[in-house]
Image (tube, rainbow, N blue to C red; front, side, top):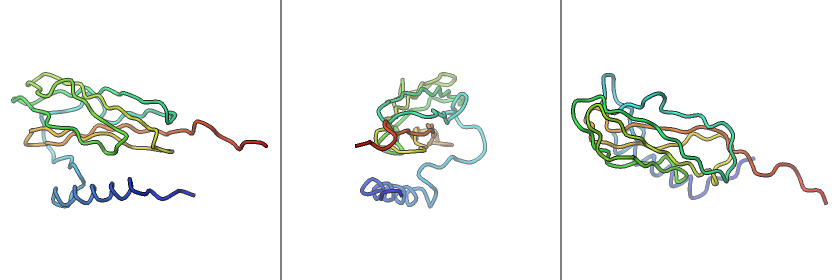
Length: 148
């Protein structure tokens, strides 16, 4: 049986609803329409970490390239939960240049399967939000029942 989500779940619902309201009913950070966008992840935007323990902080780099003709400024990172943070190697990406977005996952509050990451917010007018994600399963440090 799962326990209630408590304050974290309530806050998550509030922020999700605020994101819907702020973006015309779309989830927090829309993927945007078809067409070329300046910032693009090289490879995949979602990395499967497999099984890990709640005490193992993980850093995953994502290489993002500016395929546009103008420089793009990274304004901020919006984590999907308090267990993730994102850091860019630079805040301005020239045309043809790349930036490394490092996503840090601290899974000590997670149990079981997870899908977490950050939204990279930029001044790219065609697609201001870029999502990079981590997936996996948090295993308990201890299993079984203690004997008397």
